[in-house]
Each structure stands twice: as structure tokens, then as C-alpha cells.
Length: 81
Image 1 (cartoon, rainbow, N blue to C red):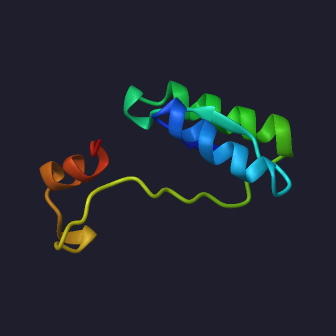
Image 2 (cartoon, one colour; image 1 turned 180 degrees about the horizontal axis):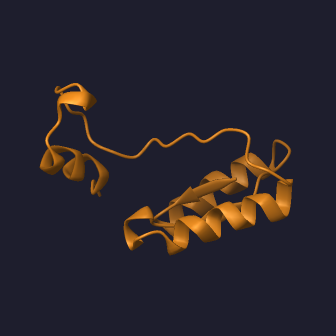
């Protein structure tokens, strides 16, 4: 299941994946407080029966190890656009 904030880029990647066997795609922005993320998981379960693995590749480079980040630093990573 593919997800991205930008529908145009998501559609482009989804087409490439569909050409290689397919995957679901849903525009989603995890910054919305959770409703879109919950919809994404529901769509994945509806299409594939379960979620086996999650890869989140959003964020910004941060030199501070995660366990030592302040709440503000972590929020900056999560709120990356």
C-alpha cells in the first residue's frame, strides 16, 4: 500500500508499481491527527487482509540520536514538508 501527501507524485509512483504487479495507493497526510492514517490502514487491510510491515520514509535529517531529541526536535522531524 502506498501513501503520500502529494497526490500527483503518489499517482506517478502507483502507476510504476502497478506495472510491476500492483499495490494500493491512497493520498494520506499523517499530520492530520490520525484520521487519514487510520483510513490508510483500513484500506490496506481491506485490500490485502493485514499489514505485515510499515516503512515510513518521511522526515528530515537530524544529527541528534532519537532517544536524546527534545520534543521540539522530534516534532520538527515529524512535521517535515
